[in-house]
Length: 284
Ligand SMILES: NC(=O)C1=CN([C@@H]2O[C@H](COP(=O)(O)OP(=O)(O)OC[C@H]3O[C@@H](n4cnc5c(N)ncnc54)[C@H](OP(=O)(O)O)[C@@H]3O)[C@@H](O)[C@H]2O)[C@@H](O)CC1
Ligand SMILES: Nc1ncnc2c1ncn2[C@@H]1O[C@H](COP(=O)(O)OP(=O)(O)O)[C@@H](O)[C@H]1O
Ligand SMILES: [Mg+2]
Image (tube, rainbow, N blue to C red; front, side, top):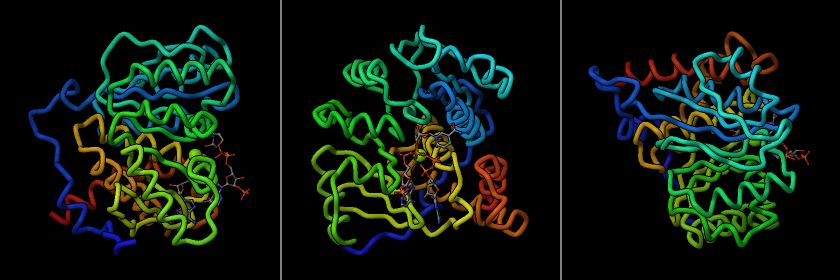
């Protein structure tokens, strides 16, 4: 592995774009978050709220029917489309063109949902972030990986990564397997963990923000929403991944003095996205 590029303030300021003062919600990007199943609608709530709070102009979710009231009441700013099924997603349809799609949080792995993902991947040309159960479904159907558009962003945690690329026996082997996978399918891999690395072919980036407070349910679902938001705002996929990971970690660094490691939850990531952005403005 060549030396990683550190994702620090310098790297971020090369990529960060301030919103134009004449912008409007139609220009700020419309993102679609697809996920959720009975008992895991919270994952989509977290992801879609994070998406909005990262600057996207409009956010729509596609969820099973059982999540309708939850989303409309919990996050009134988010628009909701539902599947025909009550508890799971069986057929992904929508009648607008989003600028970016995030798929997977809380999705589940039911056979009907697997088929829906397959049909979706066959026709999708929109910039895409794939997380959680959508990754697990791909791991069970590796021949579908060839359907992915170049620069699709995959965001596996270590267990999801292993399901996807196979078992490794050392850190070096893990990195070389991830690099080969990224090159083979032309995808960007956000390798989440205590240390998050981003792989884009032979190029490896290493994040410098974040702490153990992020080891809490839903913090990955929030990251998916943040990266999807940046992608919808016309950031190049690699910049969306880099900026998303950096800001996500920064929220935990900012909140830590107030929450401690123990009481920080995924909603605290969302609550601190504003402060994370403001700290970038101060650096400029
Ligand atoms: N409120 C909601 O609706 C929420 C919904 N959620 C949704 O639930 C679905 C299932 O997702 P999931 O990630 O919980 O399950 P899964 O893929 O089996 O992985 C779990 C195993 O992975 C491992 N592991 C994880 N991190 C690791 C690390 N850093 N370092 C090392 N190992 C690590 C660890 O393995 P262990 O150490 O236990 O062997 C652990 O047991 C998914 O759709 C998600 O979006 C959740 O986001 C929660 C909030
Ligand atoms: N000890 C840690 N230090 C820094 N970041 C962490 C730590 N543990 C987890 N994270 C981050 O928290 C997120 C967890 O994502 P994930 O495992 O997908 O959670 P979930 O599926 O519950 O949303 C990742 O971005 C990961 O990098
Ligand atoms: Mg996850």
